[in-house]
Image (tube, rainbow, N blue to C red; front, side, top):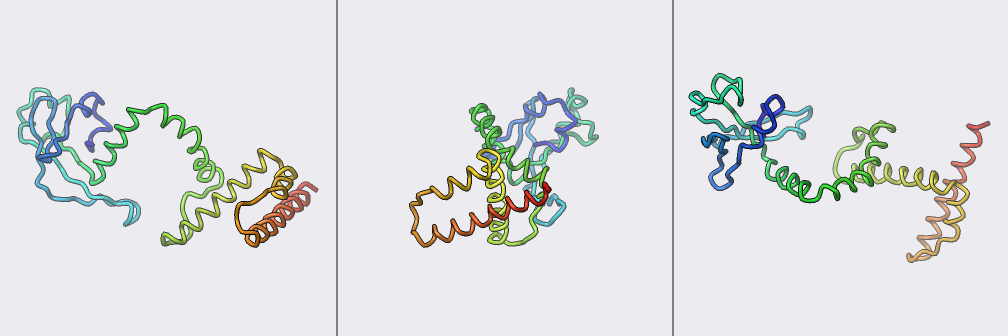
Length: 197
């Protein structure tokens, strides 16, 4: 995707075609933009959020009759292609083929992350390392699911359902699970009553 794409007309950006076999772009005028093959580093806020990209240019821009519609750069149009561009293009293609499926996914999933990030303020993790972050994320999701269950069922109904639940798992683990979560819900009720008083 072009680094100038934010300021250029969409129809023009979309008409630059990437040729995977020879690693070039073809512009709407039929000229070929080539790369030296050198990877450049785009830095992010953190070391992990940066990425690499290649630059594509053509000397034909200088003589192009529609250069003014394409770029304001004196040297001509320059396109940056991220190392992740193939994955982005595949995702865009899947989205264009199934827009309703993606809309449904947004309706079902995206509000969960919006709630956790915007309302609860979890826009970063406090721990580092995949195992620890997965554990932290699992706890956040557990709390979200408990709050959602409370909103849908109310606390007394949820406790009643947990008491009546017939588990397919080993008995010892289920007894511990029930004991821990029932005491947790009782503590939640007492805390809510204390706050309400």
